[in-house]
Length: 140
Image (cartoon, rainbow, N blue to C red; front, side, top):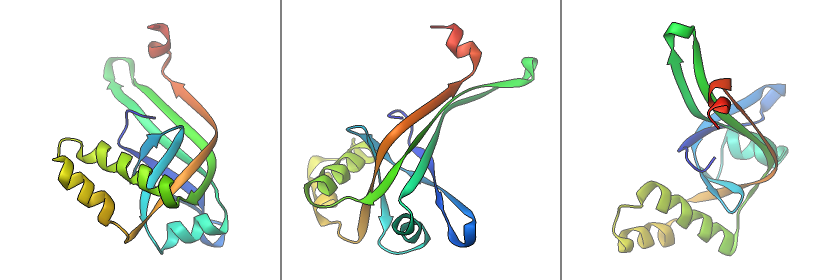
């Protein structure tokens, strides 16, 4: 979960349709955080039903001579909510660090402190499950 840069958020969408959307995230203190517009389909879905899942594919290598792929993935299940106060700021800093870690500290601080146009969504993870190709499991 910590290695990857994008995953797919799945939640209950409109009219009984599932809604899955790829997004950038950070895994911080056993929670998943991502930024979002303050309004829209994703936020409406989360507010209506906070139960979500979040899937990440860490590895997916085609092994043509075996007619297969070697894969590794994880799915987290939990409840999503808007992060507030100190938690929001800490999560925003973690996002900025993950995606802009090589930028000057002043630039990162300005980005973090100046952003009020988006929400930070937290997923409180209730459980996770993973799956990998048997070839990866055999290497342990």
